[in-house]
Length: 199
Image (tube, rainbow, N blue to C red; front, side, top):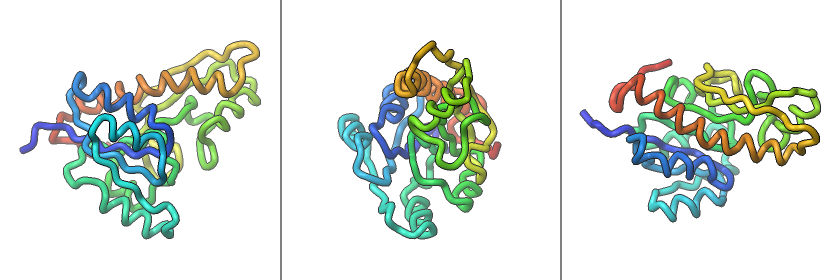
């Protein structure tokens, strides 16, 4: 029985959340085994800096083929898949296969401002347009419904007067870095390295 907790991270952007997860791995006690990306991006550079293997998927593949390629890329001994700014929608088949073992970070207090098309600065634009006084971020389990999985942790962030969507997003992103690591630690504490049950 293995006694390490293996994490596979999926990313599509600059890799800020990915790097936060990597930097915390020795303190918390897990190991990032692989980075999966769907495009050339900054996360690859960070993986190289930390000597973590990465695999680039072909995002031009038809949906079923992409899902199959992603499934094949994920190491079989992965305990937890972390979506850290990963743009593709995870297929229903992968959601079922990895139920309770795949999590995502989203830059809003779900269920508000979630769902298809809600990512990046669009989320904070929606927060400001709605007049919300509180924004924030959420880490949740991934299920077939987009941003609809069980919430693990949330962090509220107060909206400042005359703040731009980019400014708000930058503050929330720093909270996402911290919250994602907390969620991994929480899941490890509940289930241990070799026994991660379906949520």
